[in-house]
Length: 465
Image 1 (cartoon, rainbow, N blue to C red):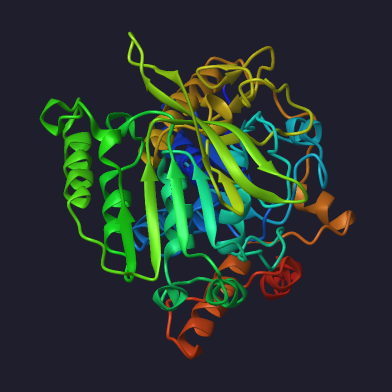
Image 2: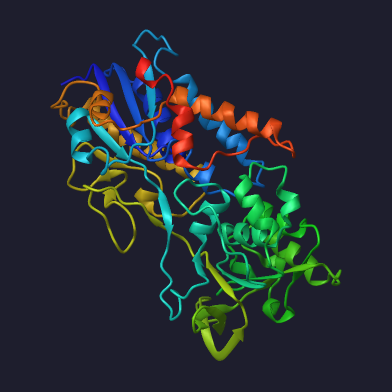
């Protein structure tokens, strides 16, 4: 059976969902036996871009290039934007709609030939040690969401701890450490929300300690992230020679690691400048316990060393540090969709190369497919695999025809769901840019944080669809 007009729903409008939609549109257009494709991109937030908007530190200007690329993909695929011989290629953005709450996954599957889950991973991975639930112990994902202006987190953040521990040796750990150590005045030119800037300006932080359970040769940073630490104004970087015993940059496994080890070695020779803040990098520390009575007052580690296979093993030495807050940056955990099977241990939807197991017509891509690892480039190649299988299934007649006709927006209208659209995002985008231009410290944009304000700005014109 040939499908003349393929209808697909994608759940999640972050990079994984947008890449999947764009690749699907191109693949269908290039396929001889398929006609046109209509794609609806559902997002639980009023605005698109997912972790690119709400999971990347505001002082990363290179991310703007990714946002611009994602914007161009969606803008070029709006209904009526393209007029091709095979029919229109369309991707509709439908924001402020949570699948499983505002509309069931089963309802989407009734209305589309296929559904792609691209919900990513928004929660922190668990750290199972005593004291992890003490006041003053935080998940890095929550802190990142706060400083990025996520609408569903509190507007304030407690920054009353002079000494802070960050557990983890990846880019998120460095982002958290850098934002904590950086002076708020140096963030004024970014898109940081006003409430976040005010919170950082009153911060009591003087010392930030970053702990990794492995050694310098096993860091998961990228060279750019690491270099940015060394460029912080009025912040001294502190390292410890004992952590570098036997570490030779010349024997690094790749050029990126070689560059980073050379950077770390150059910092070891720095003299203290007497800066008002310090950022300490510790290696060979495995967390044992967060201590405290009513709130965090310290953290205890097992000192580790490389074992026979290179993996860290405990040496028997225990070290304690007096800190008043702990941030856990050991990874993310997948965001499940109500109605879809979920692997609780791995935090993913059970799938084989993007096909959800036992569910013809249901697919997965991005971190919900493979776990929260890899960079943006991996997300694109990952989507390519999933879309290849979907197009193959469509061409071979595996996908069933939708059992329910009609526009899904009619359902949302009937339920009085205040969904947002691409035109609404363009209005919100323009509004935020105007706020930036009129701000005391001129910025590219100032994010609107409250969800209801985002929706109010985005909704005019929806009823005229």
